[in-house]
Amino acid sequence: MTSSEVNWDAIVIGGGHNGLVAAATLAKSGRKVLLLEAGNEVGGAARTEECAPGFRVSAVAHLLNRLHPDVVRTLELERHGLTVERGDFVPSVALSKDGPLVLHGAYGEVLTGASPSEQSAWKALRAQLLRYAGVLKPFLSRRPPDLAGISLAEMTGLGQTALALKRLGREDMRDFLRVLLMNVYDLLDEQLSDDRLKGLLAFDATLGSHLGPRSPTSLLGLYYRLAGEIGGLAGAQIQPKGGMGAVVAAIHSAAERAGVTIHAASPAAKVIVEKARAVGVVTRGGETLRARTVVSAINPATTILDLVGPREVDTGFVRKVKNIRMKGDAAKLHLALDRPPQFTGVDAAGHKGRLVIAPSPDHVERAFNPSKYGEFSPEPVMEITLPSLVDSSLVPSGACVLSAVVQYAPYALKQGWTAGKPQFLNAIMTQLEAYAPGIGLTVRHAELLTPADIEARYRIPGGHWHHGELQADQMLMSRPVSGWSGYDTPLEGLFLAGAGSHPGGGVSGAPGLNAARRIIAMRG
Image 1 (cartoon, rainbow, N blue to C red):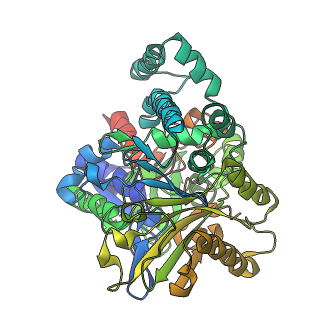
Image 2: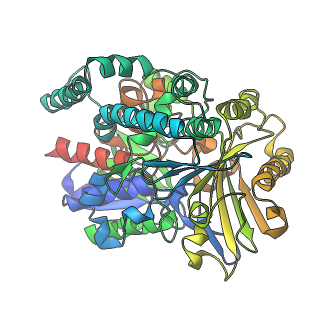
């Protein structure tokens, strides 16, 4: 392939936030970059969309808690309209029939609604969780080391992590190794006594995963959450004004400023492979585009099995990709309401936060159990936000929009979602009514997106926002598959940059940034 045949230095497939971050980073390094987005607009599942006439809401992701600081710095997102202030941090409200318990600030710097002894126990546990998440943080923020051919830079990174572990001290280090693969239920049972607090933490540890609190390694989910940061503080989260679409808009603006060419409504149909090297993309419209580098920011299985084709890579790699577990368990609910709801015992500030229905770890476990057998939870657990209380421009005057992530809703419902969806919606509304009496009477329109709906609308296989379960055997050096965790693939010139790559999902931009840095480092 001569240089005259190359149209682009890089073609990025997928205009979700990771694709935009990868494209912008590559363009800032002086490369000529084309981004292909299958939908009519970029942003993927982090867009702000209309769920009913006049009501706008964040599509799937609705809280920002892990946008990587290097993404903010590299793309200068503050220049593109992204602002994060400490006062924007939202509280976490654990709803209960016994009254709410509230974590304020960056993941419970202050706890209210609990006994003095529980507040003291939480302070100690929170400090411990943040220390341990801090040990994992370097692993989660850079390319995982290739243990077979480890470079000097990677060895230095491992050394820094080992040093962080050593700094914990002998007792903490021993305890870190003890609890690393522990289930969250047992840890909470050891250190806390208030079911409301334990329920909230159990929910957060299992959110977005096919796990219950008693599942082995479920504590990893909590560490993953606390290794993220906003505004420099671990565990902090905000509701962006304008919804998550405002975050995407800032990244989109940075990509355009860097010179990225964006083609919307241009789905990729095929990655062109010549002599075991990716050399371009054919669009579904039949256009052939050639490039030195192809970057896929969509699901790894879609990339390898559909766009590349299993014949182009060895059978061992294909088998590993086929076995990535990626069937989602989280549904998304949007309610257009005549007026703001009133959750019992919750003050005005609490209504602007995240309201969690997970009254005990046992309740979360019972909600999880049916999903193992292809059934939805009759008493689901959920994270609720009321974004229009933070940004009134999202709704008509006096109205309100409710956004909730609801578990557990298995992708492959045994009875089928056509019959199951109205029943599941009824179960959700019953739960909401118990904590916000009268809310049902104010509903103008309800939109419930099951994992199957999320798959169809946002092209996410299995409807799983991590593009693959975030569990011990699918994390770090085994993400997306063992032996190929560093954004490379068996095909020269093809790289993976989506949530299915290390470190995983959530609106962090880390997979996109790390993949772009890898490409830049390889090409000099």
